[in-house]
Image (tube, rainbow, N blue to C red; front, side):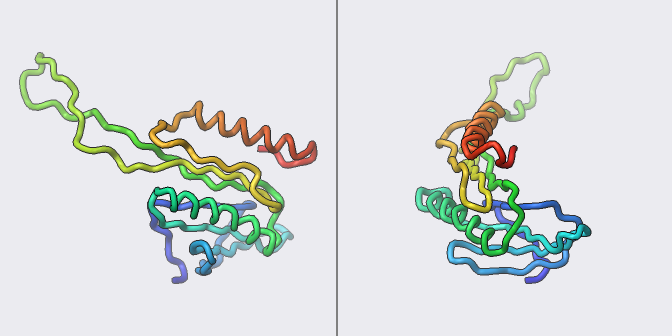
Length: 176
């Protein structure tokens, strides 16, 4: 499975550091999901750095949400073992449920008024999970409530809550 790309509709990414060129991909089976470890070389004198992509192919059920939280909790311990950089990394999934009411009007005179018709069914239900971590553990983790549209204001409120928790860690802590 070397060089295989991840194609999954539900995935979480945790990354640390800046990467300049990739070397190879290696699959690693974890106890709470599958991890794709991408080993990268840096031109700086730091040496090698690691980027971990954790794939969680669960449905968006209550059990699936618990599993995703467990996977997010597992990532910092994996980070401690590999002695990564001490910068903050994020695990994000952003999406929402909505009804698409835009539909092409039927053929007719261009002067006639047509009411918008809704398409049958809803788009798939997805939720947003946002977990901010460092090498010591999870700083902030939240799940967007069901049937709430994801907007810029909602995302900014989440960033404000994360910033407040980081500020509580101390003055010499990393910033967003």
